[in-house]
Amino acid sequence: MEIIRTRDAMQQAVAAFRKEGKTIGFVPTMGALHEGHLTLMRLAQKENDIAVCSIFVNPTQFNNPTDLERYPRNPEKDAEAVSGIVDIAFIPSVEEMYPEQPTETYDFGDLEKVMEGPSRPGHFQGVGMVVSRLFELVQPDRAYFGKKDYQQVAIIRRLVELKKYPIEIVPVEIVRADDGLALSSRNALLHPDKRAKAPFIYRTLKQAKEMAAGHTLQEVEQWIKERIGSDSDFELEYIQIADAETLQPISSFADAAHVVACITVWLDGVRLIDNIEFK
Ligand code: PAF
Image (cartoon, rainbow, N blue to C red; front, side, top):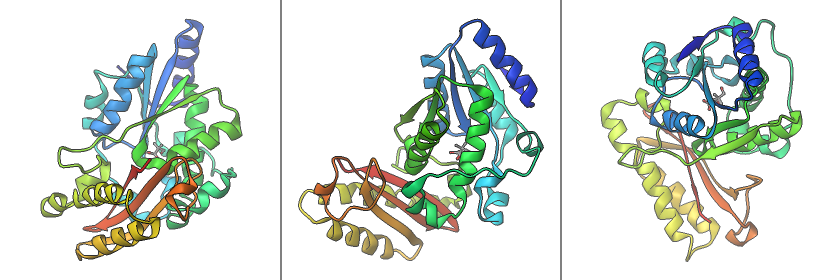
């Protein structure tokens, strides 16, 4: 595996692969890698001639400076973890990615008006800024994203449409710990006693999915609110049952062919997100 730190070197490597007619699979990450990321990378390697990952904690997608500061970073361990899986790890500095103050904006429409949009103002604009820069540099044939960030996958698809990138977006199922907690870099910030309680979030979503067969959407949503509220260690930021394609709220399960429930919960000062597809 080669570690590349500059845009110029990345462009040269891509040009050489293209000349040889090789396909490129790409996995963008913010590091603090876990099995979820490695699953994406293994898939990228399997489905393409060359697998590239990026490791870059993107400042423009953090609306909260404390969150950016606290975001777990583990560059040496990350480089070791990906070394047998990808061909190239692109690990740029902030100056390399943003030599000038970024000013571009993206019209993500209603997708940006729900859930993470209002909760983290500017977050998806920042994701758009970094992912478009990375896509233009790496020029992948396919890019892999975890479905834990369900809304992000929809945003990236919209970005690809807006910018007309010839890139296939591959969404990949959530990888969970044995106890059901969705793997996330942020899990490392939980104290062990709180980490032990965290699977409560997914257990609640699974029960809600079972309930959906015999209850209205409003009843299910209310039940989730009460259940999360019943343990004072957890603070619900939002639960939204939505059309899985548009991510817009629906008022009945019959309103959409595919339905997803997305949740954001605070535990131990850590913001955890998860989701479940109902149908
Ligand atoms: O999902 C993430 O880790 C980030 O949002 C991404 C896509 C790497 C952009 O910084």
